Length: 153
Image 1 (cartoon, rainbow, N blue to C red):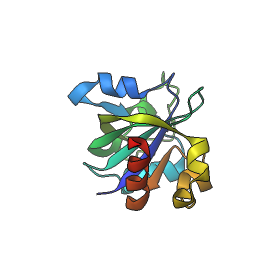
Image 2: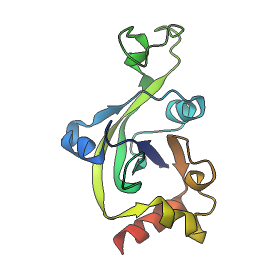
Image 3: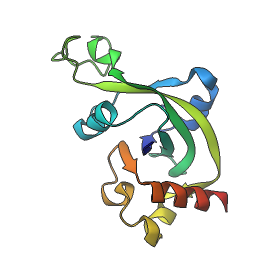
């Protein structure tokens, strides 16, 4: 089992939207960064844990958790000429972009703001701190457990 952090703007997809999807879950699509795409395509697996991180809002930080329910598959938006995620170079035989399905697993007791995460020595090597802009990023088991402990306090 691996662990991840997914960044989202809550005006686009929020933890509440993920929760509202119930057990059906929802598609995590629209990723158009090659490094994030590679994580989705090559490393995410069913059952992996996810921190949901709200960005570009008043309360920036980790707000909850989810899990992967369907491994990577071709993002259908890349084939739709009416989609903002359309990619004319993508074909069904050679898709360029991938997505996964996720399901809500919990809301943190307390939002963990980026400001708190940045000053925590146990998280100094976290991708979020070192390479903040990546929308899909790995989280180590130690980081996962530490953040869970912080959120419970």
